[in-house]
Image (cartoon, rainbow over all chains, first blue to last red):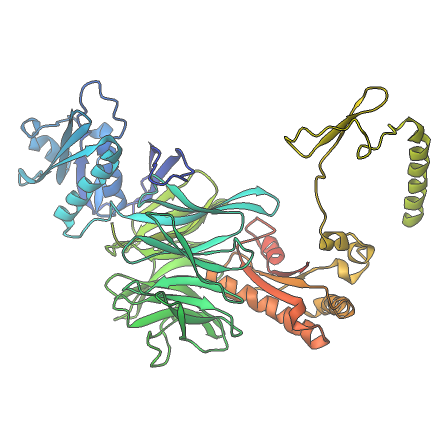
Length: 435
Length: 190
């Protein structure tokens, strides 16, 4: 395993999608802390920009970041490039083969009126052929997204897997204001943390954001009324609805795959149990009935099973049971002495969880067919893991020095990336399954 | 000794105040015909006989009954068990430790003597483990205290419970000393 560190500062431009956007600009740092030597070697040449244009978005750099963070690519540093072709006719394949590149990306931007035309070509250096050509026409505000669109095209052409570079994440930040006083924010941002927008603010804790399957809503827990309460917020309108405010705990919302129900944790009957809340009429069905803690439910992709954390066997472990309640709960986690907050991969074959052993909390994946447990991260306080929509990457929160930050790790554990938000502690990432 | 000193200093302050009283502006603002309120805020000002402008300020803070209660000697004096309003727990446990039973008993006695007094038991945990599990764990801690209070004779409707899990730490370091301070139930008088 090699260790390469690249720091790529990006100046973010304000997203005015929502009127109550709080973050005007922030400096985002993406740091690749570990990478793989065996990955595809690709050179992304800086795109040619129209003469005298004020476009500040560096498309080549965004594509480089996207590909490098995916774990499938080793991206050539710009200073190692011997030439900067921007048109196909300028490409000399042997020059790129000589420095060991498998693939080459070039491109240029033209402008008429307020529209940018961004043209990209992807080449196979050894076969000396073009694999893909794409032109995207956008307004200035969408150049960032167009760059991610190109990354998706390149990634899919080479790996055969759909890219996630146009998906979004949600996360919670906490900023200490004074002794025992905090400001909590729920943010939505591009998958790489760019263009963050605060969609909810409170002086009391905000927790457990969860995207609806269609990507249009977020369920979360807020203590704004000094008790826990589950809200559903529609992103397009900002409209908010309280869906659970029972006595005791109202926590851990998890959307059913059809978006019609939420699995939630309530303690109204004594101790924490999982309930199924039907959103149309807010009716409740009790799913677990143990005398222990049952919480942190997650649905299987087919909606037939629910996994959850329970300490019914004295320490927290992951259990799985039918979502219709017809059947008993089976324990599936046996490595480490603490396993919690499991989540299924999109194909339902793998479960990711927080695994505690010797006081160290790390992210582990469990292959449900082979029961193979693989630890992906180093701890000491890694939490809130979730799969990317294409199942190739896991996003999680970790402690780095005195701060909490978001990180991603590829399923082989070999490529790690930090996403740093400039203010406060960042935690509880949730990756939207739709673009 | 301490009390004596306090009493003595009180006497000194009173003596000083009475000595000053002759110089204090006499006009009672509320009675003054010169008082003005321009409507832009609630502050009222007036001119005393010597032409000095005197402004009645808005009150900074209204102390709640609970805040006043917490300033009373039985809640303030470190020697009183009621001054202890935090119960600490061991890692991943909601078992009340023996050393805190006397504290819980003292609060139980107070609540039984004052049946209109209400409290909230706030459950907290350290940062290890997952957030929602810690919400459940910290609620169990608060419920352990709740059960003990009820067993002694406190009425259930005097007690509310809220669990914050690891979301509201009092100690921000990432070490065992901090963790020990954060694993707690706070008894909050309302």
